[in-house]
Image 1 (cartoon, protein in one colour):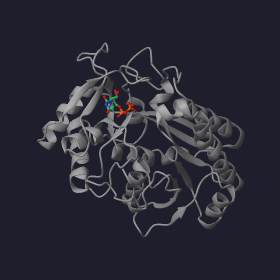
Image 2 (cartoon, rainbow, N blue to C red; image 1 turned 180 degrees about the vertical axis):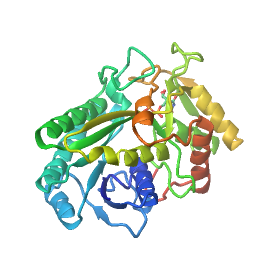
Image 3 (cartoon, rainbow, N blue to C red; image 1 turned 90 degrees about the horizontal axis):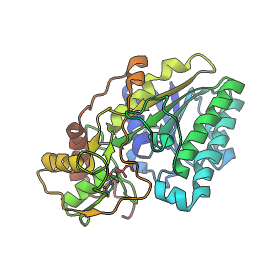
Length: 332
Ligand code: UDP
């Protein structure tokens, strides 16, 4: 299949591009490189540097490439910023993808794979989270993702678009060969920050909240390997053959890890100490989020390759050790 990967130079998109190549598909990348890295994309695949806000450019890409499926990874994802600058998030995460959907429909491209998030559930009343858990986002980031899901559903009903929305839990890890990995600027995620602190690249890690109602007082999250996320996106392709279908899947391992457990795993894998200090809760952090992803495992030809946190952190550590400056193309 010819697959347009929007945001294919970013963290999850670039891993998905590799997995598409492994599976014999032909990825085409469209990325504005605001957060993406040109170096994360193999040189020999078609790469378009452009923004979904430029409707003409999007039209041109779809005219030039015969696309079968579109994947969208190009959202902004800083929760705190979405609270202070919501319009930036509504614009990028909701308004701009409309250009993409319009361009697709004009050309009869009707398969779409969307990266959604567990942030659409907000603070759930029951754990683990299933796809039927009430979606009640508590910040504009999660709201834009939920609004996208609803927009896709409406387009599906009206125009026969078939789509899958994957609600990710915490994406983590790096490619097994260590050639690509996580390189955000700014970095806010626990695992890369813990690794950086262990390597002495950053000051002490701050543990945001130690007084939660959890076994060790720190937040519980569900860390799923980025390659496992990627293979699910490809495994769903056969489901999209029939027009007008809508699928929603949680993607997590189902095993919650506390912040302290993650720190211990980083120390075990790296053989280094993670210097840390206890800090106040981070506003907007739910105490616990973890998935029931039975639905994806039952309905898709998809198996988690990294079920435990240590094997995931090993790949992240391998990437960081060999690429201490990440892709080295952006200032930290
Ligand atoms: N966290 C932390 N210190 C940090 C970054 C994150 O204690 O410097 C905690 C955060 O409060 C949350 C967990 O680690 O409970 C995962 O946070 P992350 O930002 O990686 O992902 P999120 O769950 O917010 O999407």
